[in-house]
Length: 478
Image (tube, rainbow, N blue to C red; front, top):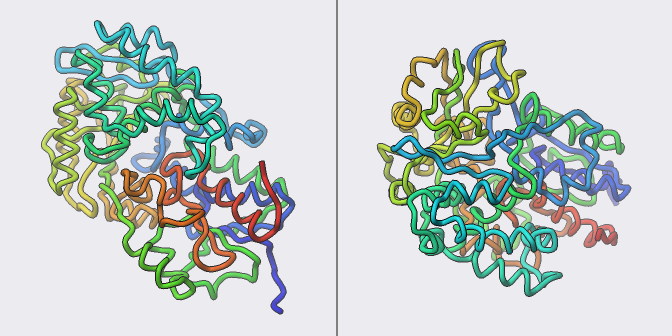
């Protein structure tokens, strides 16, 4: 019998890979993390992409799911080097008339920005906020019998609806626009079932925990997780790109923080015909086109609320956003794309030289698109912030091919690890008793291609590690 060098190996050091590694190491196992790049982090990396001294988040920039994550909240990361900054406004949504809706920590202040839809918003969100502490762990988990079935059912009935259907509760362009911007984080047409779920979760997170920025860059979160893992006795090796199982040291289990396409390449020969067929049928969603800017001044938004917001959703009305997302899903490139923008340096001066600023933005594009959307994105920002383009010192762009080259998990520019529609919400990446198990004993998938999907929360990795601990090591984690 081959002697094992490690109890478990985790391939990939994104937030889910690190979460899996920490969970396994906490259980007393010996764990090795292998990362193909020279720096750990996956979607939690920060670099000087434009000019020296300008720190840009390469992928994830704002962290409502991290600060709301049951897994992250169980750790002592503040002891290992990162802290959050909370903008006064979590997210703002400007309109052509110079006004803006706002998402703030206060439900009353948020509702007040929605005019005659104030009471409608409070009636929608307050019951979820009240129940969230009891259902959060169940929402951010694979399909199972929930601990609080009634509360979960009441949330689920709203969450499973399409964003366009639920928007009918609102009567004002302000409330409908704010809602559409939140739902567009789902990266799919807003008339798809379950698109309300992401909007409800993000809004609830804002009211309960906020939408913070990591001081110094998102990389600090990854560094803190890695530091904690190493303090427990774990080992990380970077610059080790796994292309076959033969490269791996002997171990009792392997957890892959990768998507089905790479998993098939590395380990497909070990899987059953049925499981391989299921992975081959896995669907990826729309991609993103991303721009980072070095600026000589803050973005001159017309609406004052936007200047105080960490995140700005640029898309105007619900009708415009809905049309943009549908066109993109159909393979087109909108002239007025929905743009998600973050302005970290307004609240974190460490991101840029004194008096200077950074900004981060992306729009959705067809999967695999190589079209340069720089002009369309910058026109959208200029539309709500006249004079913006005059403040650009330098820019760094990434189309879907460049995004996938940067992180092979982003197939065709899909940053969610696969579309999270009704067909793949609970069965990602395959319909099995446990979505984290592969058909090969000891091999698991722990990426955002498993429930609960994309976002910096670590819950995919946590649940996959729990499954491996029970299956292979007979260790049960509560």
